[in-house]
Image 1 (cartoon, one colour):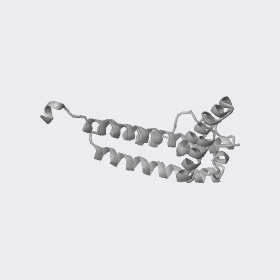
Image 2 (cartoon, rainbow, N blue to C red):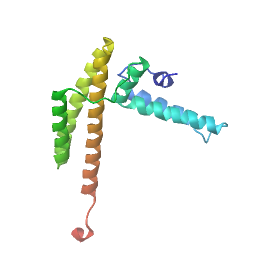
Image 3 (cartoon, rainbow, N blue to C red):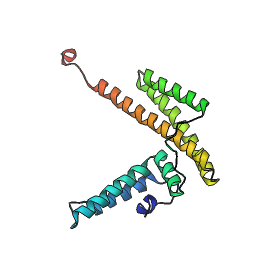
Image 4 (cartoon, rainbow, N blue to C red):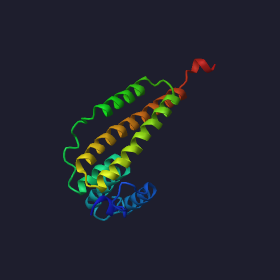
Length: 172
C-alpha cells in the first residue's frame, strides 16, 4: 500500500491537506501502541503512518514521492545546474540572512511562496508529460524553496520570541 492509498487520497500533487490530517489522526488513534494487543506491530504501523504523513504533508516531498512511485526519483540529491535559478536562490538566502523585521520576512515569504507555486505548476506539466528529467530538476528546486520557507518560519519564531522576552528592569 502506498502513502496515498494509506490515507485514502488520490495519487496527485494537489491533495486535500485537511483530509490528510484528519485521516492521519484517525489512523494514529487506530494504531496507537497503547491501545494495541500487539504493541510491536502497532509501533511499526504507527511509524509507517508518521513517515507517510511527513512525506505527503509537504509539496516537495510529495512530488519526490510521486516520482518514486514511477521509479523516476533517481539523482534527486544532485545539485541544481540552472545558473539563473541559483542566482535568484542566493539573493533570497541573502534577504533572509539580512532580514531584521517581521515585515521583511513576510515579504520574503510571499516571494518564496510565489516561487513554490510556480514550481508546482511546472512539476504538474512535467509529470503529466512524463518529462522525468525536468520533473526531477523541479523537485530539486522545490526542495530548496521549501527549506527557505522553513527557515523563514524559524526566523519569524525567533523574532516573536525576542519580542516576547523582556527585561524585568525595563518594566519597573
